[in-house]
Image 1 (tube, one colour):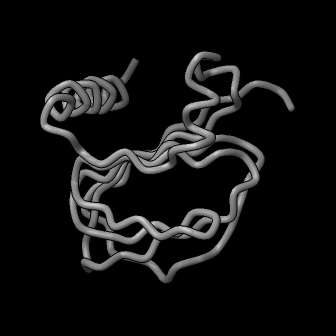
Image 2 (image 1 turned 180 degrees about the horizontal axis):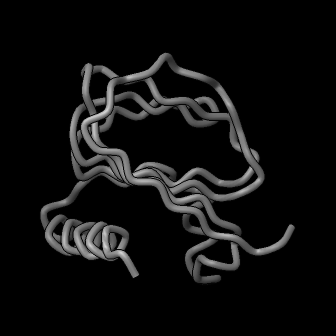
Length: 121
């Protein structure tokens, strides 16, 4: 598979019916507004704003929104874009709930990414 990185930002979107799917790349999903349940493999994770999930390649997953409107940031990429040192870690832990010691740093990175995407250049 050729290396690639895709990014999607969705703000204030209407919840859609859940669709079970998988893909050959990593998915990084960061919830910024709303609530949902994320099904990955055989586990369900309750998510609130600030939570992050990392879905490894080939993992069956779906998201079930519990609020009618939500906002999220989504990355899909090959392992080429993830540090080799974190790959074994994300294979074991899929859900990273917001923590008080990391919330500000993650939110700051989200804002920087969002601002960069909104720039015309």
